[in-house]
Amino acid sequence: MKIGIVSNFTIPGLEGENEIYLDRPAITLRGLLEELSSKSSGRVKFIRPSTDAVHPMDFMIDVNGVPNQGSREDLDVALKEGDIVTIKVLPLGGG
Amino acid sequence: MKRSHVLVAGMGGLGSLSSFYLTSLGIGNLTLIDCGSVQLSDLNRQILYNEGDLGLKKVDVAYQRLSLLNSDVQIYSIGEKITSENVSGLMKEVEIVIDGTDNFETRLLLNRACFEKKIPYVYGGIFGFRGKITTFLPGRTPCFECLYQEQEETVPVVPVVGPIPGLIATLQVLEVLKVILGMGDLLAGRLLSFDGETMAFSYFDIVKRPECKICSA
Image 1 (cartoon, each protein chain N blue to C red):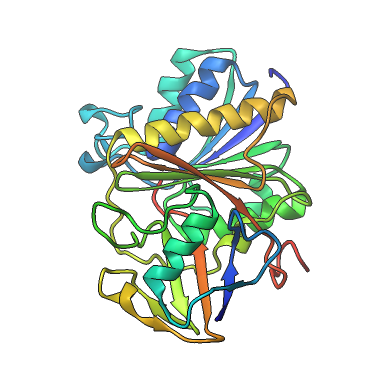
Image 2 (tube, rainbow over the protein chains, first blue to last red):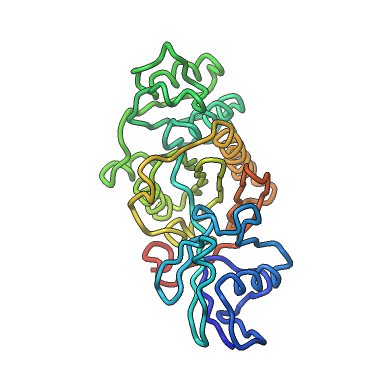
């Protein structure tokens, strides 16, 4: 299956690409993020092992324009062929 | 270094430390801008101030303390809020802007003005145990608005663990120093992220947003 990827940074292992081809019929958002982490050789870790979730101050994620909070439950959302997942690294507001 | 002029935008956790190091380094001209006064809750991280300064304007206290640290540095203190009306004028004769603000609205203003005047902008931001830093070089790297376009804060109050601004401000000063001296590898086009909970540093190669109305126009 093919998933579109939109990001404001270059995901290592996915340079110059805006989609990823997966050799499996189904995948969850968690599975996709783990796959992207694996392709980056661990340089980008989207899911924190201690919480099994994405920290909102690390990444902002949406699926087809719908925000995903990246919690343990939210990561279990199933993706389908042609979905577009946006992953953005965010600046922090405090000073 | 004596000929250089750095603008410290915001004199909170980041700005109070970066201005201290810039003064001790002997930066020739330092402009400090902040419209706030010292609050008790600032003292966990804003190292220029103490309990005796509560209620006083930050730029006035900072001017006094930094002048005592290095009298060779020409310090200009401005007790104003950065606005769309004054931001361009604040950049007059400034060579580098170092970010110490605490909101996205002001950062967007600084970003636009720095881009228009081709001034390097050393961004720093903090939240809890986290800090991020990058250096925007107009015409060469993505700009702040490529990363973020919203003016509103996503959280009403930003919690900060004291040492985090210390770390990020120190790295910001290193970037400023390298820009001035024209040496080393800058965090140009790279966002450095530090997570104090896991003690992990991460780098992200940020990309230009094709529809950015600042740097892709």
